[in-house]
Length: 145
Length: 102
Image (cartoon, rainbow over all chains, first blue to last red; front, side, top):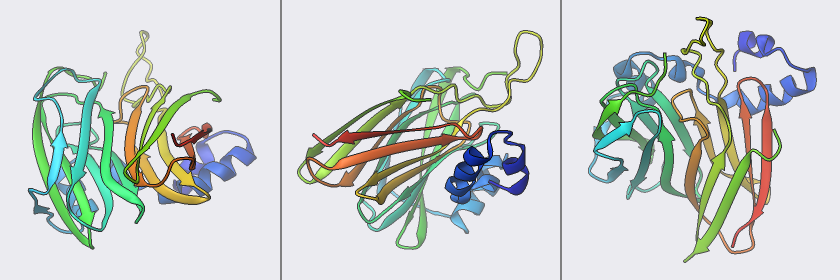
């Protein structure tokens, strides 16, 4: 959270302090990126290597783009981060997950999809970046507007 | 925002699977209401899971996570662990819940 967001949050000082400290690591620039290629470069630091060791579980066709279940798992070792990118969304980065040595590299959530898009799973493992991709067709978009 | 979460954590073969549902609007800030006014962005930014004071998993969310979010993850743990799941949103709201791993 940068200073401007911090100051405009407009809540009690105590709450602000807590929110500010907790959000120190929230990757604001990545979440505000509007172009998925640049976003992936930003997150991965370089071009991620396509990997068969990443499994994306998602419906082939999502009837309701407002709620699309996505699960990402991998057999890669020493996974430190998993990010889920919906290439065609106005803000492609949906979420990023910081793993610890206690984590098992698996995460499942539900994302919004404006239209048919590739869903990219970026995995950071052993200091390197890998990616998996899967197309999800959307019949009714779900980003509102 | 107390009572915003439902969390289940179950251990099998040394791996705890956590499943959580959170009640939250997850507004993108891109939508407009009936009068054409932009509905301000209101979304959870961070969810952390801690066991015995140690963070085992952190989720950073943007506006692309669906309304009333679902989150599932796994960590190496045991039955009886006390797991705390806590979230904070971009408007400074937060909630936390402690559950015992079954």
